[in-house]
Image 1 (cartoon, one colour):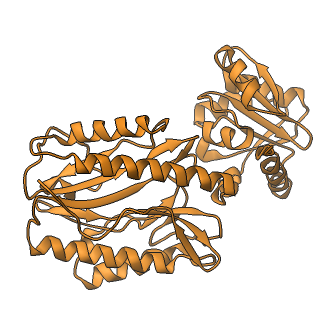
Image 2 (cartoon, rainbow, N blue to C red; image 1 turned 45 degrees about the vertical axis):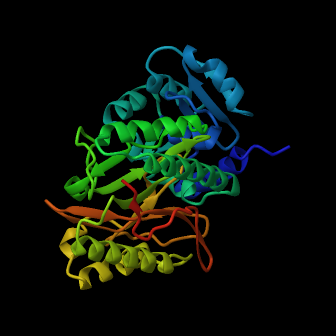
Image 3 (spheres, rainbow, N blue to C red; image 1 turned 90 degrees about the vertical axis):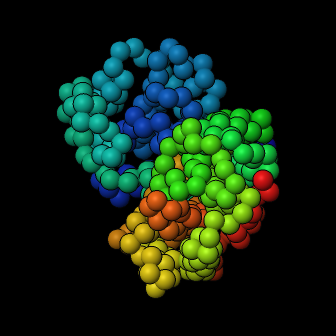
Length: 363
């Protein structure tokens, strides 16, 4: 029987708390709370001290929390959750309660502080986020399965494309295929863009119908057992729209391969970004690659570390990150190629298997 993975996470959190000078940690963030406790509800408070791990929730979730948060003290509360969490801190005699400022609103902070008595609320940026950067074997297995499901769904949908189908219909079909294969949901709003609209890095699928000669850009992912996948492929429908497209596709393909070669434990994230960006800049498209090369993935679709020009992060073995350079030409079209990889000591393991070479979908 597998052990409870949250036990080791609590040990690491307590070590981080002690190093930061806190005798308690408080969180109202669902992803952080799930990571620490196993509870998957949308609303909860987690409170951790050196010898206590408590989870507060309302009536809607009490049965679920009791089943999922093994080994935790689960309590049902009424009213404002942040106020109840503050009262818990006061009742436990906590002196310094740490919180992640990026995951607590100003209103929540004020309510928490008002109810926490003499406990001092102290910001500890990234306290849990840093723990979440390194994935364990179970987390990686879930992301691998989410990637398998997403790729199988994408293969099915691309094979079934026909003239006249809209971007919006295609996105809906893809998300339906996720569910048929056991996914909980899409890990973000699926992006499907045809033709010149593929130049929109985060465009929203619309009523635009598919035509022969169109670029087909799909950025998608799904959630399996709470963990996300993320992938992008860019193909064409019927025929290639021109030599200009072959050129930018080849450039992005080469840039992505260079970035993958740069990924390894100890590599600065900015160097991975530079490996991709330098190729695109040398080809003359530097001003058409305006986003970072990648980001962490896990319980959330965007986690730390970030792989961009200014990132201070250094990659560590066990991090799961995307590698996704792109070129976007307004009025013409764009290309993005994205894989999800796990950092190793001497490189990375790519979770994706779909080909990245230019694919022509039969009309």
